[in-house]
Image (cartoon, rainbow, N blue to C red; front, top):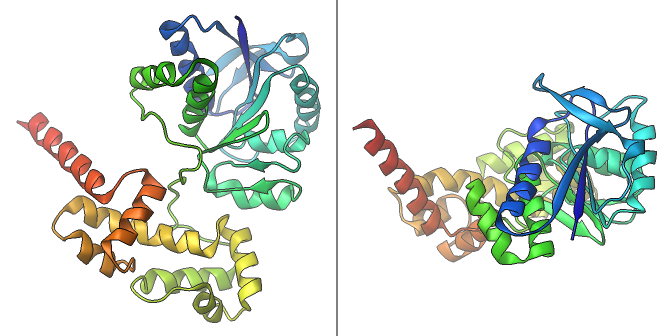
Length: 324
């Protein structure tokens, strides 16, 4: 069975958004008679320059016929320009003859412009999730997801998340064993589930709203304290309902998820350091107890604190061995 995968690129695209999923599908061909074949396409065809400066040869979109999977790659910033609408129109037309349509990172903006994300759950790089939601209110953006599948439309977060999405597609097509083998060949984890959180650095995040900035600053300085939505809304001098809405628009996640993330980011270096017990770390970072911290680590990292500490020790041991 032939599975034609077409990657759509444009000037300034991110090379890894193309090469990561492409390598995953290509390795699947080595593992199983999967029949994936590939086309890299652009609006006019010819050489297209990536953000890194490298050029990639492409075919014109209008000559691409039979399709299995259509993937729009991302760029370092939100795609803009007069070319976006014609490309979105072409993608909508092509999607009608493809089994599934997908985007990587900010490619979701082109996909949203096509209307294919209307009424669907989608994701993109966490930094652009609020902008995607504001620009396209008809879709539901989950800025915490690694990848999403809603019907036959898929979206993924930035960079390596495109590989996670490709592995999920390979699993759908060929089964878990093939996808697991491909992950090993690529030396990546098999596989971060779509619901796993993007690990964005909220410690460095600077929202546009002064009130939300004040609430985040307060939260960073009072991780051990009660950080309920009511308390944060009071700090921001807003009603609870208004605070929740404005916070989600500015950050891309709910206040509860953001607080969990802040605590996780504070706890992780302490867990990796290994000098404190998990109970001590949990109390100092506001989790209350080690069980609560364990559940948060599983949600965010897909690993327990014990596993995170063990991996850190293994890496440190390898570094020491390499220096001998």
